[in-house]
Image (cartoon, rainbow, N blue to C red):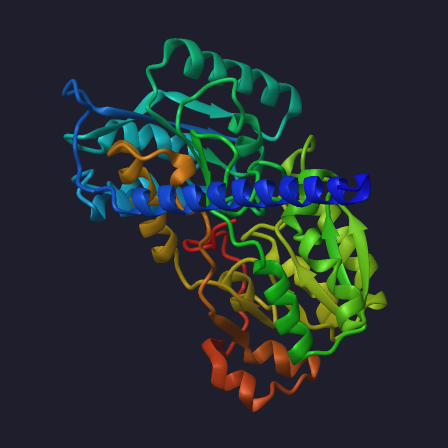
Length: 407
């Protein structure tokens, strides 16, 4: 046999073996996930009869976090893991720490407890963040008295998705766990003890819909120039669309971390004032400076120049003047998802073996008064697809949004 032919046969068999190994790995992974999905959600105490202890870690307070926590708790109640949900724990304006303390004191259950001293909050401060991470991981790895921890948001997910401990982690309210490196892929978190819900095309679907309704050429967007800030704004999904849909992205940078709340709000308003005369559409993204208390003020510059605003976030923003949004009306679909995931884990499933993909349902919200004010005629086919129509623009009353989407 000639050397070239021998070499070619070797390459063929090496490639064949590699493909078979990859195929077997994928098949094994799919089988594991199928098996994990059949694990019971029936409430049960730990094998020794004690309660499962749940902890909580957040990068700081954000408008989505308490409602997402409420959704998780509601799902656990639905599946029988807890007996009651005290309304006082989720009143408007309550902080994450207050909600957690309330849950730990007022929730009754024969199966789980929200550990009162297992709460960490970095308060959007990098120095405090490192301290919280160190303290949390030290307890998870050494004391080992926490059975599962909820990592609320991107900062928390990044800090706990590692092999420095092996306590099950549920990453919730995260913009894009894949883009930020929290998980390895949509189908695999990369860590046996880590699970993160993901919708990898959420923001691309939104921008495509916005462009179909309003074929903009210059799209304004505000974000903090950091890996987390770019993730919150969905840039990994939006930037590839600029060539496909033939538009230019016009950014403005505004700090979201390492500053106080007022500075964050003023920075976003300043960006809106700079962008409004220089774009023909605007994408209102997730940013700490965008709150339920200042949304009317933030939208004012766009009314001055008749600029349509698509909200990444909530129906609340549409009710207060954004033209439209494609968001879930409530958190019931994530409530069930997170509760089943936690129940499966307590019944023996590895977090890594559970499905992470959950796409937002298609729900379109439109503000008719906004359309009139900016002189935009909403196509009839769009109105026929709309689930929520607002006839007027509500004014800020300092009320915290009750049902924001899961970021």
